[in-house]
Image 1: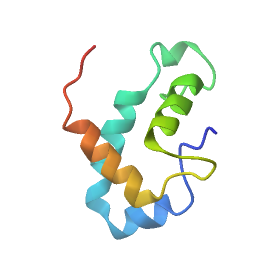
Image 2: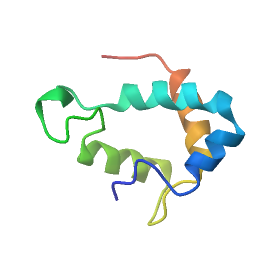
Image 3: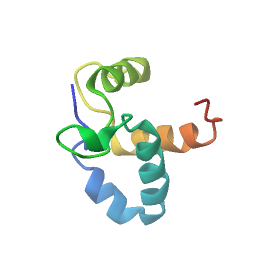
Length: 83
């Protein structure tokens, strides 16, 4: 499951524009290392890491709801970065 943009996320962000920034910041923190060296040349997470995050998030088959994604993003930004 490699769904970075679940159905309804765009409409949710239009209704809640203050959620755009936390979601973008959290997405940037998930990006794969050296993402600019590999196609598709976008800062997206590694497939294995994304699948792991979705399994720990409790997703089984369906993508998370937009509100759940924003809540998870806000939670992740409150955690210290350990790189």
